[in-house]
Image 1 (cartoon, one colour):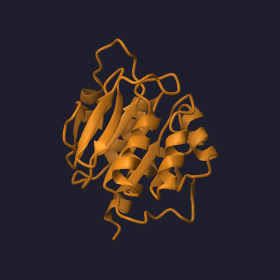
Image 2 (cartoon, one colour):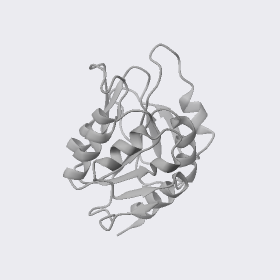
Image 3 (cartoon, helix red, strand yellow):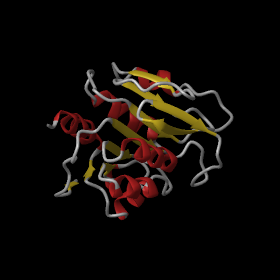
Image 4 (cartoon, rainbow, N blue to C red):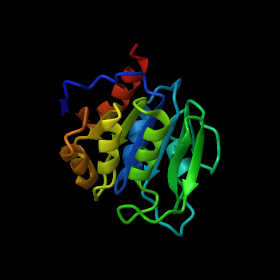
Length: 199
């Protein structure tokens, strides 16, 4: 476990982004379960999902948290205390600080939904006012997005690869050198709660 010395957000975040792949349902469940019930920002989650199946991810994650969890819809408004999950076969993107969009653009890192389109679009909407998290997964999705978030002054939290069920995604994010925090899964939610309370 490590903290970087530049781990404090320069501005209070207005959105939390979470990316996960293999092992992600369990990791998301743990993360959401630790977030404050009065979370003052929305959470946007890109979890790699199989393309052709109906997904029960929102109902599964709902059991772990008092926050509302739902599949994101194209054009819907962002609300604090709500978790928006990318639906199967769609990239989840941010059109403006108040509005989501869904995209059928080609797969990124061989997957749709993917982390990088979410992170990169959120940077265009929110600038530095982002907390971006990369959790367990088997590829490098999220690494480019992490670099973009950090280049614009956002805060990056990565699950410690040594504690992740699958190390590929968190290791690629750590290897960028842009992680503000590299933490065991259980420490991520308390850190987010603390950053969102910071003046």
